[in-house]
Image (cartoon, rainbow, N blue to C red; front, side):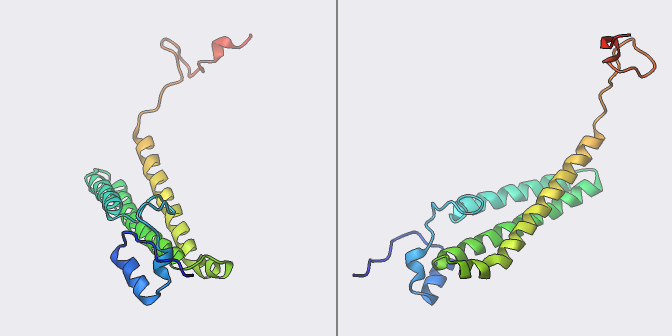
Length: 158
């Protein structure tokens, strides 16, 4: 006896998949699914993520340092691409039963996703390094000390 398909809230892409593959509806990911980067399937969640990326990019573009502004803008673009790739990967994984063979076919998109996230991380670290380099360095000298002696020099035995 065949089970009736689950009734879930589907987005247009999932509906398109179901039209192409009648079994896809049974394995479609519900809006509450916690995928690769969290619950990305709901339109509200996606919109919220995209808005945050837009805010990040707008903030970056207003920075005085040209390199920092461009890194932030590029990173925002990579984040948008990352969300799109993540969603495509989740849809592909939900469309059919995940077997070793199917996972092997998905490996190229998984590798693209991982490369994107690594590059986003690198740009974020580079942005942080730029900010840190601009901060004044804390002095290791105590007030009244001269000659660059370390704050530890008084604690050492003579």
